[in-house]
Image (cartoon, rainbow, N blue to C red):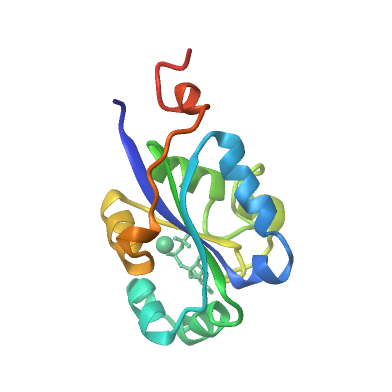
Length: 155
Ligand code: DAT
Ligand code: MG
């Protein structure tokens, strides 16, 4: 089969507060990606310090952690062919005012860190992040009637 991958997505507190959870999920569903895990999680400082470890020297690091702890986030795993890059395309670039029109960040947000969504940015990051947020038994493998359109030969 083609290059089927899994990626970790978090719907951040700004989107939860602004009642946009459904809109975000809809974008990925409409694309033809498969949801294989989903839950609410109230993140703590230890998890976030790991998750955003690449930013720990930045002046905004403390504010970023506070922001991410304001409400629970919606943690999800999406599956599909080349899904890591596909999801990053749908999410758009980090600064919502520089993101391409049509992306989630461009269409529904204006600022960092309130840019609605986190998505893994590489195969290695996806593996680590999936393990960080989900136990094996929380992740599902199942067939959908639409799999032949999205995972097969496309006919
Ligand atoms: P991305 O979320 O696009 O992968 P990143 O990993 O560089 O971007 O940064 C993680 C998050 O940190 C980002 O979604 C929002 C926040 N952030 C990044 N740069 C920022 C800045 N200059 N000021 C405030 N928050 C920032
Ligand atoms: Mg990142």
